[in-house]
Image (tube, rainbow, N blue to C red; front, side, top):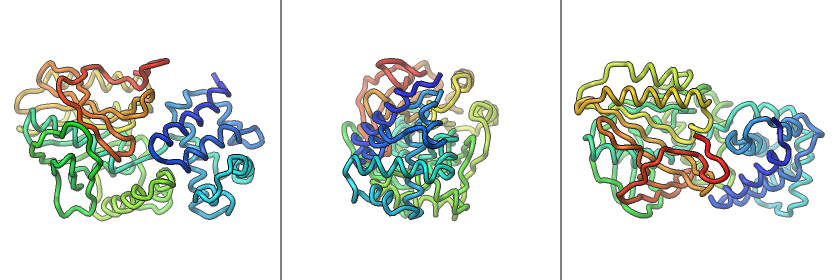
Length: 366
């Protein structure tokens, strides 16, 4: 059921996340949109009448992505003044956004049709941290399965170089080095050999298409200059070397992949980042059941792992959780991380062993 106050509030909530992640321009746009949204455009009406859960649906970032795309296209000097940071007066920002929502209604409306494709290569730092914990437990050899792969940038996890608190992983000659600020305990210094990566997305992004690549770039916040440069390099890597990425339903694909033969001595790992909230509850349950069932079959020669980097919306942080089979160990919280991988905080044992929930305050979304 639509809840206009909650839908407006989602933009203020997103502004808080942006401030916490050092993105003041994007925060200012989100705050202004909470005021600027009205019913003079189809875009405004659709946002205000949104019937889903606006925070979990990333409603604010859908619209901000469209506005950023207009800025990048140079369609309106006043809008570009906001996205460049030249215009900071709240009333001026709000007035410009009101006008843009009407003038660019047809261009903005399609951006509400699906969740943001924020395919951030640096998020792989959190997932590699989880893999290092599994490598310490099970040995170096892995095959990686990823759901919600978007453009497949994190399927390049075997081609990136990582410096994680002084623990180095990956090819030294890689054009992309992921080197987040490291806090807390370092990850295990275990060797990692990723033998294959495969991924699925309900609507994969083909970065060979310039229009699709431009859309991906629009989802990177205008404040994040380093992320924009890293994205460009990662896109070039995908174009040059390709990735094994297919279109499909996450639950269907996981069930099929887990049924495939597994090489001896290899740990098969399911990984995902900022995906769980977008899956229907039935799909999440099917994936849980599929992993538990496959885990029950796991042996010392054919292991199974699960690495997730998903948001804790109450605490403005993301959590890296790891589970492995064989064994009865529960999902363990091994690290905290910035949403876009700017920093990682390694945790020390004993680890929290609670299943992931997106929020722990007003409500919990399993």
